[in-house]
Image (cartoon, rainbow, N blue to C red; front, side, top):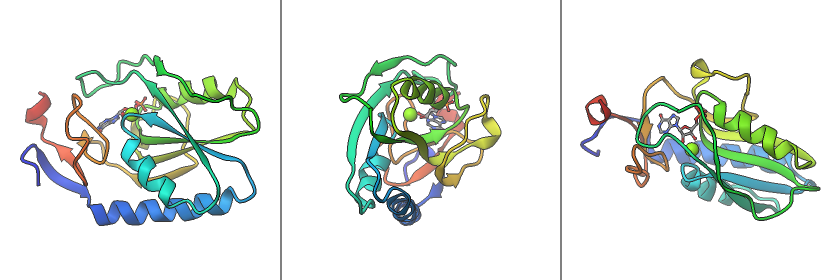
Length: 178
Ligand code: IMP
Ligand code: MG
């Protein structure tokens, strides 16, 4: 285990099992639709790469990036689109793929901004959900785990751009960011 991590929350095996279940459910729900998976960079990168390989129906992918936490562990409450999607959304059944749904500020903004471009449908798949931290009324259509209120890293999630490459998800020691 990494010395900056106090506890492993989800092991590689648990993550892999959860992702496979999500992939099976999404493949079933989107049969006959025009699935386009949209990953929110950079945190969703690892989840997206695994989830798309657990999808058994035709699908396309696209990416966008929003400004995030900077080097802090709390959201600034302000969302900025840093990289936009490549393609138009008409006739697409969008599935926004996120790492964590926390305050909900990011996904509320994204769902509204992308809905305005008239996709055929729009849903949210988040690996982790912290529902008790919500500040907007957004909910995920698909989620992997309900996560306790701790700052966590690994499997794409970072603190100050570090720890994204850990293959598991763990709690970051508060001494690292305090
Ligand atoms: P929201 O707008 O507050 O819902 O923020 C969601 C984003 O905050 C996620 O996509 C993550 O990038 C980041 N985030 C929230 N909680 C954590 C955490 O515990 N560790 C790492 N990043 C987090
Ligand atoms: Mg993120």
